[in-house]
Figure 1: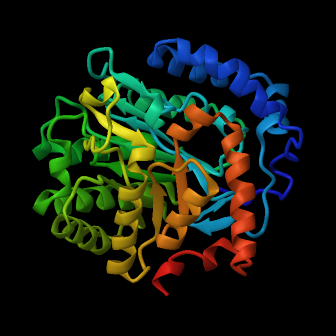
Figure 2: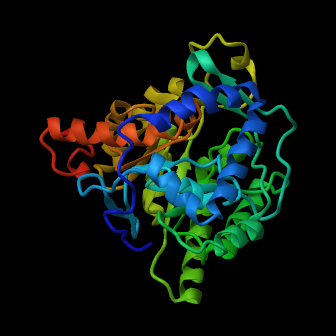
Figure 3: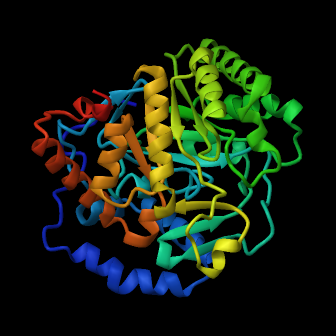
Length: 384
């Protein structure tokens, strides 16, 4: 991923017209639809618009974020024009990379992808909890398979932001053979990913979270890193980074073991965290639905996980913070706890694409108030 020019993103819309369009028109229509139908409409729309040459430029005018020297980040062998990325789960097949890269994201995850296509769990499997500004999903890694994603990414004529491919195992694959599935995904997608994310933390694939513990984690990561080295030699490329996405539903002892194992494996970093199975403090009728909860109720727990990882590793293992970020203050709290980059998902659904612009502007102001000239100075600040 080559460094982009400072004019990569467009000048912000000072009149708030783009925000008004989402809040007064798009959101009411989308929220009247079934959540999964709305999801498909968004992906289909961004995919289609991204293929029409003038449209991405128009999206950047409406929703783009100007790259600034205080928030641009270089790490994992990539240049991130902004520190706010899109979490996995929205663009499951890599069909809308051009569209998402035009609405202010500094990077994005695609997937989770598995070696073979699979339908996922039965519908309905995606639920909104508006009073809590949250979502519950039990999608189950529905995707078109690794080869299909490779085809989508290969067709990209221009790549403006780093693309992280989030990989998982097929539902039918046992944990004993899970390493084979992760290796297959790496083989199929190595040439098209800027970095990889090993997903062992979704609550919606039976027994998947067991891969976070004991020798299973150590053996899985060893297999992943071996395959990455094999592909690096084949491609004659520089090293591509691997991150591990972990769950928030672990105790201190489990977290300490996971972090120690991940740090010893050669993996480049951790994404903290995936969705939670906790429903503490929720009363909405959909709170009882089985699946992973994302959104504001996850914010504090994911930040605490970040805090513990940073403390245990003494800040030596980079962290991407994810979970409940809706505002610049939310993002900044995770950064000060130890995150070098952050991701959003649920906020995009509730707030619309203007959320990127607001977070970016707010982060710049928060850095200025604290006397920092670059975001890296704020990473882990609460530990100093």
